[in-house]
Amino acid sequence: MSTPLDRSTHWPYDLHGDPGRFSYQRFGSPTVAAAEAALGELDGGTALLFPSGAGATTALALSLLEPGSTIALAEGAYYGTGLTFELLSRWGLRVVEFDQTGPPPPDVDLVWLEAPSNPFLTLPDLEAAATHPARVVVDATAATPVHLRPLEHGADFVLHSATKYLAGHSDALLGVVVCRDEAAAEQLLTFRSRTGIVAAPDPAWLLLRGLQTLEVRVRRQTETAGLLAGRLRDHWSVQTVRWAGIGGLLSFDVADADAARAVETSTRVIVNATSLGGVTSSIESRSRWEGDRVPPGLLRLSVGLEDPEVLWADLEQALGGPLS
Ligand SMILES: *Cc1c(COP(=O)(O)O)cnc(C)c1O
Image (cartoon, rainbow, N blue to C red; front, side):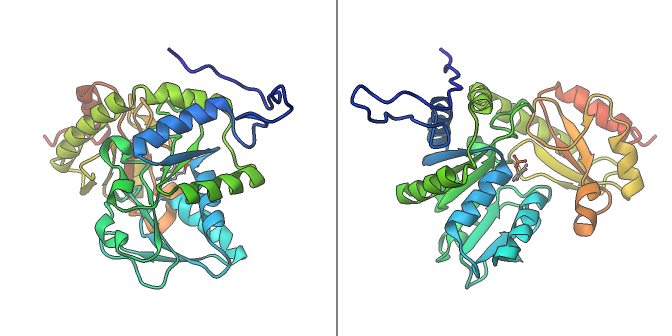
């Protein structure tokens, strides 16, 4: 009923002295392999698990590209992804940003999309990207395979921070890359085995536990996010509401940085914290991390599994209540 947790770092050879499927944990281990099988099924490809979403990003970029290669990165995508690539510029990696709602720029070696982007919540034009000669990565952390399977829309790789919705309980740091092509998965596996950027069994077990409820969690989070987005749009103190129509992540703007700070520190049910995708709702002003890349009054809300009316009441009191 439940996948056993095997923490072994190595396993005995068979009676002839040959390695079996598992020999040394850096090359692969049973609990991680079970999680990869489940993730591969969800996205329709071959999955490889990494110790974090950022680890998956680093491994994928380094294994596919070389000095002088250019990545076309969706503008407004996860801030940390841009920072990772900036760090890799020392090794000759170049990045150009583009509007992912249109076609990617020509003459790039890899197209990096985000569905929907965090925290701007735009959706990429997957059809336009699929006709581009470069390989296409879709970071579908916020959509999850419940709402989007990018490999079916021509993407070559799907990446998730499994820390978020997939594990889903704010207690496991993990990333995954799901490859459409078996040869690409082999190449990435070799890179992972050599560099050691590999996931450990304990978080993989927590991920397997979380995946059992992925669909019900995400469907409920999407439904609640839709309800809250609609009510926020009608609230007098909210200027812009961004929600992609799928997933439990949304963002909205209040007047300025002070107003945003007042809202995030006034919620009682919704926790004032970073990250997303857990069962407990959380809110934060993103300018604390992203500076002027985001409007000063932008608040990012990750909708959890609480009663939607309790969440709305909490937001309403934090926003200053109904206009009376
Ligand atoms: C959190 C996040 C990441 C990075 O994942 P970690 O597990 O924190 O390393 C990448 N992409 C998106 C969209 C994210 O939200």
